[in-house]
Length: 120
Image (cartoon, rainbow, N blue to C red; front, side, top):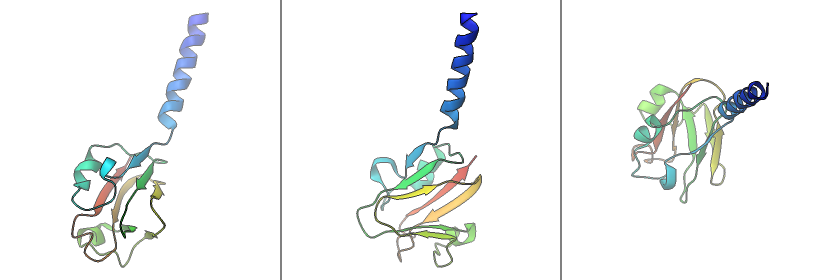
């Protein structure tokens, strides 16, 4: 009888663990800056609804969620959402699917400050 209770408790704990939001620091220890391969970084992560992206930076940057076409052309002028608060910027992933983020400061996206995120 005790082993059934233990198994039930372990099953509940595993469900709680998988349903918890995870915080991801974009670019790991590099943060939101130049000379980071954000596509490679993102491809090594698994993002779920409710997870939080943290964009820490030390210079003048912002974060804009854009369409795929605007991401591809590094155009932040028609952003779905612009996050321009003090560092770090925190973005909660609220829906599954593809999301595209870039820095809207002129020249920054072209210098590599853009990250594609796929939420499962």
